[in-house]
Length: 188
Image 1 (tube, one colour):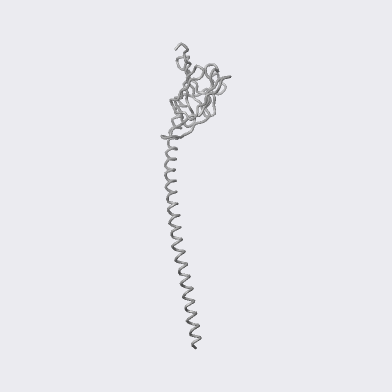
Image 2 (tube, one colour):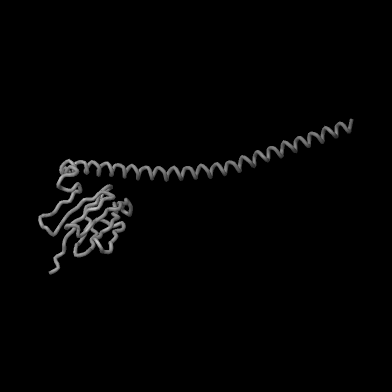
């Protein structure tokens, strides 16, 4: 009987040990998993805050673009463009009262030739960047047989002299840029 009792006691001790080891594993897994879960929750919370900030910025940009588009529609209604194939260009080229100044509005990917082809301006693209955010123009000024002059992310007000002409960026928006080109008098 004592061997049976010893076996029973040994079995109870082994069972208690197994239960203790199992409980220790569960406790370790719970605490380790809790730390991992807390870290994951904090990470996801930070990412969510970043996405919310980005969403606010994008909504602001969309509102700004809607206003620009509405303004462009109003301007287009006020100044209708000539029909394709008509005598006037389908670019919005407007000579000023002086023959020495010409104004041209280009869409992205367009080129205009001014002063009888003596100068050409190409609008390559428009970036929305900077601090504060604004439309920056990328383009090229050129003339037949002359070295091109690049405009790389320039702001409104940028001016450059090219082959006796001052080319000045006077406005830019999401889809267009307007340039004022002045033939410089050589006597000055």
